[in-house]
Length: 355
Image 1 (cartoon, rainbow, N blue to C red):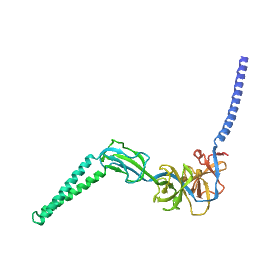
Image 2 (cartoon, rainbow, N blue to C red; image 1 turned 45 degrees about the vertical axis):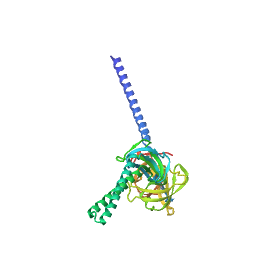
Image 3 (cartoon, helix red, strand yellow; image 1 turned 180 degrees about the horizontal axis):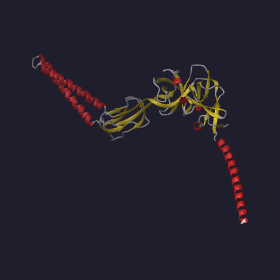
Image 4 (cartoon, helix red, strand yellow; image 1 turned 135 degrees about the horizontal axis):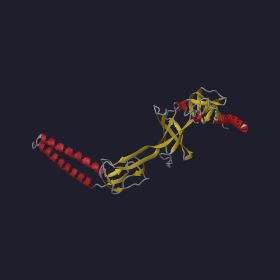
């Protein structure tokens, strides 16, 4: 019995010792985990510094070239195409015949209209002579004259229809698309599409500028334009349109007209850049990188670092100068702003700066 009691006591003491050791180990592990967690809680970010610089107020804006003149035109009369005289890529001039519609029935109508007019004119001449001798009444003479006038009007329309058998280019330009072939049946209602003509002798570059930038622009001002595919060439442009109202993104659409060179290097749809020059000299401006803003510049919110933590500040942004933004209020020179990693931050989040 005594041995049993001793054995039980030994077991109880051993279990207690094991429990004590495990408890201490658990506390040590929890402390280590807490330290690691605290380190891992720091969000990695990149930084920049608020500073005042001498800034040139020149700026650029990008867009796509569009033709000043472009036309998708359709048939006005019905008929069968008997000849197509141009192909895609051809350059055509105003009034040039592009295709011919079969004119058998139209020519017959014109001939009939001419015969009717000749008869009506002859009748009127006879009635006019007879009226002088009292052979016909004034009413009969008037009726003959009206018949002649109507016949002449019908002849004029018939001659127009004959002219419409030749489909002519309404503008000069390149045949960008052709929708008919010999044998095609075209109709005037609904109108059959015939050709797309694009004139690239002059193009317009459509760009958007900010509120601060649009204030320095004027219609008629000259500006240089470049195309991304011709980095070594500069084209002369002129501002022809400035929107009176901002779009949904609070930018103002602007159009620049460019005269193409003799080889027509610029094509509609190419990517271009307008280079706007400012008449003002350089100014001392407090600036931050554009990517310092949370979301977009319009948010007017920037994270700065204070004592190893991120602090969200509300600022007043000024002009957007390419990849930099003017700061009017809310930051001081020398403050450290966060330029990457903002999506993972909240006010007070610990941060770790990546060099």
